[in-house]
Image (cartoon, rainbow, N blue to C red; front, side, top):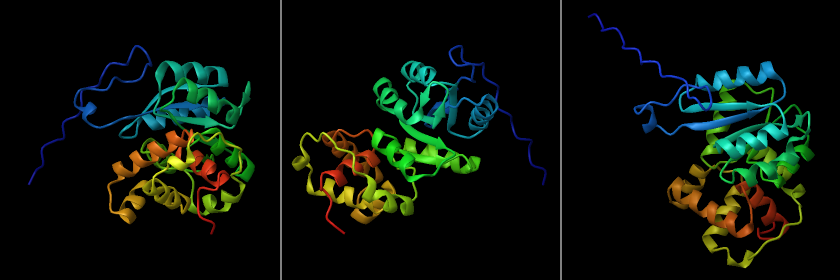
Amino acid sequence: MTRPAPSLPTPTAPSAATGHPAVSAADSAVPTVRVLVVDDHPILATSLAMALDAEDGVQSIGVAPTVAAALEQAAQEQPDVVLLDHRLPDGDGVSAIPGILAAAPATKIVMLTASTADHVIVSAIEAGATGCLSKTRDLAEVVNAIRSAANGDSVLSPEILLRLLPRLQQPASVSRPDALTEREREVLELVAEGLTNRAIGTRLGVSPNTVRNHIANLSGKLGAHSKLEALSIAVREGLLPES
């Protein structure tokens, strides 16, 4: 039996703002993760942006080669996720995290680094990053990290998270740690075990969306921008039971 030839989608005109293909009405039904790539190596950054554009549900909205450009584009574009290089010509990526989050509070930041040193990862988490990813990872892992970050999951293996817990000691300004509910403390304890939002939901018998709501609430109470930063503050403030 001869199958009919598949119909090809009609190309869309590039967006005037970003130069990338505009999202059609049909595509808009699927949430698209908008990603800003911050890296000063033009070939690597451009290649990564093009590769992301080829992935379903992911769209590169630009490339920024410096901290200054990253701050400007984050404020203008409000990306869902920023892939942030550790070393940039005009500053350190970690030191840029607070400024990016101030300009785009809902943005999730994933550090891309050639170094897997504990102090780099800890500094990024304490600054508000959702996680860190080695530049040696392949494209599939980068895309999975982007999607995980956009969904509110941490981008850090459970093994690394457990190893780093004793080092998450940044002094924090916690407004009302006693205001955490019992369920929010349960969620924090499961985050400390390295579980994803889906796994936490399964453990507690609730949906991943409910878990995300709990994390958003407890993060707000702790003054954190990500659940890893919330975990860092919780460790510092003694909000978790001693193992």
